[in-house]
Image (cartoon, rainbow, N blue to C red; front, top):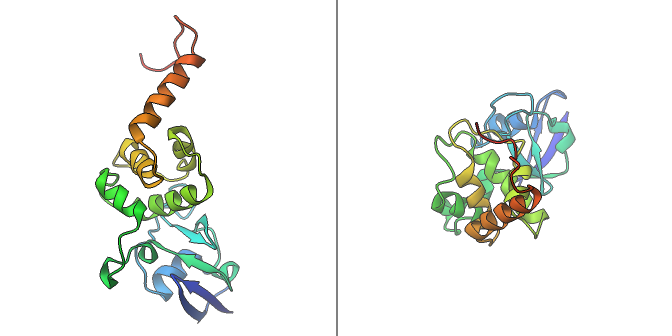
Amino acid sequence: MKVEITVNGEATSADVEPRQLLAHYVRDTVGLKATNIGCDTTSCGACTVLLDGEAVKSCTVLSVQADQQSVTTMEGLDGAADGRPEHPVTAAFHAEHGLQCGFCTPGMVMSAVSLINHDDELDERKVREGLEGNLCRCTGYHNIVRAVLVAAGKDPDAAQQAEAESDALRTAPGFSRGEGA
């Protein structure tokens, strides 16, 4: 089947097998390698891309389903190689040390971009919930959440303080929230 997919603003077309996954189209047909394949089961989120502005796990989207649509990958965000400024989300990930080995980073960044684009009232809880489908085996997510809040124009320290105060209000004095030993 022939598909026509705009990838990072560039028109692409190819004859593909009907069962070809979008992740393989992006990596093998178009040649963009930032979209990682970690599980093929939607568990890890390393393959997350934006499909018409919505975060999707490209390991479970068929290329034919993306026909006549627009895909944005990590490579489409940053323009350092061609003189465009660094995207605010990737800049925040660098500044807040929101990455370690880098395998999950493209998926985390793409999910963060979608989250920021669709929610003006982000706080720590919403960021954590919004990134639940993305796994990182290197970090405790703290710096990733900070990076997303910074990219969204929020003060991560104020967001953390507000979350702590909210938790304190929900827990009656003398009662544990069930955390810790």
